[in-house]
Length: 309
Image (cartoon, rainbow, N blue to C red; front, side):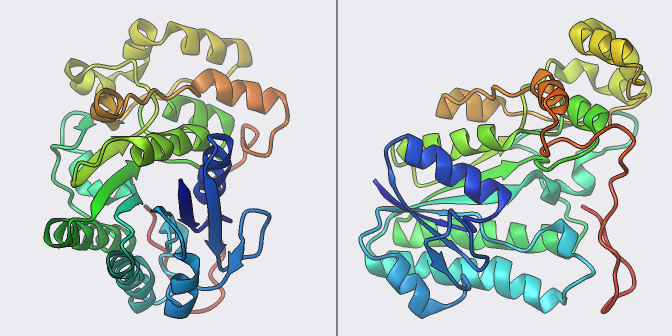
């Protein structure tokens, strides 16, 4: 299969490109930033470039977007232009060219307030109705909605993958998140590959996150006594944290459940908290050392406040 991957220089786009090539696909990477995984360099909103990129293509993986770190740094109109208008233009051009399969990389962040109900941890799956908080959330949700409409009207096969956190963070945070709200880029890439290779099903949407040991009935206790639940459900993590002198999270406010994606795509996340610890010990730049704070970029121009996803 010949596949166009937009945003191929980014974390997810690069991982998807590598996975698809390893699986034997012919991949064309497009990104505005030059890299070893970008065959075409330019803006995803450039129609002429997209027409060239779609030549001979059988499917598209669309990862290109503005993300949470851009909130407060760029104008909201640019978010809509990149995340919504360029996505719709790409999908329409696909229809014109007879390219009938699209995998769209979305985010669990768009669940917003719905992910953290009062009094208990949120159990977030495909049945939860998003309540977006930021322009990033709103534009990703708007893009999903537009693609759903195009799928029904034009017969475009669209799979939306709402992925959880997937970027370097301090190791204790990142390891704990792998149990309930984080994922490795390689597992994200595997989900994209399976979505491309599965039978066409019109429009479908999945939550993609790390495998969780928790169950829905843990929700209240997770919020109020996370160490107690961890001792029952994840004793190996508790032991690993104790050996390293790391404190356990005292409260867990949400669990993103990948159960539906696992059942329907045959996908299983492989890189859990143990992989985070292994990468830390191997001095991988994919994991930050303990004590390294999650700091956003300093705003030197434009808005003076920065919303966080």
